[in-house]
Image (cartoon, rainbow over all chains, first blue to last red):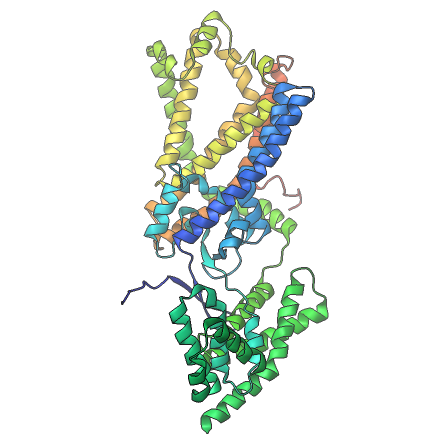
Length: 240
Length: 325
């Protein structure tokens, strides 16, 4: 079947050393997911203060309204200041964004400064109207870079974080008789092994084994089962 | 044969460079905590070499995990090296000494506009309630109305219900939200801000006219003067900033609208660094001083006018200027 996959919007930059970098802009789903994770974290954090506080209040001498101030106010502060505080402290990340593999950058690709992060949080007042970030979501749908009004105001974008893949170095170190490209493909196949369907990964494994070890070896491997094929692929990486 | 040779060359290059890449990765992880000068220099050198390696990897092994890994390392190193140095105190000093006075100067027209609209709405509100006293029920609760008709201002009994600290906290957070809204709602081409300004004006004028009917206007003013001068001014400042946002959207000049908007936000949001502390001050005054009958009129006026003078001094930058400058 032929699917047309729309090109994810990318943020293209050129660094000072004239290296071209291209970062993938985060989609609405990812951003929403990150927000939900953060929402749960801050709710729990606020409750962790609120509930024990209320319990302690009912035990001790209730100076009523004043104790309410000591319990409700910090809980509210935790809940509402979570985003601005963490975004500034973690330089454009939050636990939720971390989990979703996202981070905030300026449109030039730099880490946002404190001012920009505070501004984008101020405008949450607007983006969260009316109720469930409807305006913000609308803005994200309509803009090319999937930004909400707060991002437009602060000049920020949310992109997918580029992760290190240190095991690639190990795969490369293991090459000897096996061509480098093949070794890297084998590593990738092994990484994705659980997520692929059995016939697909079998076919890929056989092709790569033929590439790595030669046609005759490849034909012999055709009789083996999945687990054995996987073991052979791992062998290729460790012994070359 | 040529293919095997180039594959050999590739492998030799990879083996040679792999140690460097591992070392750079370690340095980057170490840099998250602290880095001594020697290691920092090594990191910079390796970063420069990495740029070359990245180019090569992209050419020879495109789309593989290796070039992705090198790109990730390069990005991390680039961000670490080119990050702006954190000098928070100096930034703050610059903010208050230079940037805020500059923005204040540029906001002269919006400030006048906001003041004018507020005044007009206050007069309108006063005139309306003066002519149709029953309109008071639109903005005042029955308790307040009955109280005023009896000759009691609703502010008399405040401290009996809520302690000053909570009162202050509630008031200042409410005001801060109003100020931020006045600023942020300017994004609707200024209409949101105008709404807030005119509404507040109407309510103030109406309330004054209503209390004046029963001879309580003087007492209301006495209650307001300590905190109200600064509070109204600050809401006015935030509103002027909001108007500026709306103007940037409506008349972006030669820039694209989004860019004009962004620059206006970056500029005028600085004023919130004055507005928010000022509102904290007003909240404290409104919670501790204004409802407390033991504070005389002179004290209240001093606090109110003094606060206003301080506000103007900070906004204009005159608070920091030495006499000989």
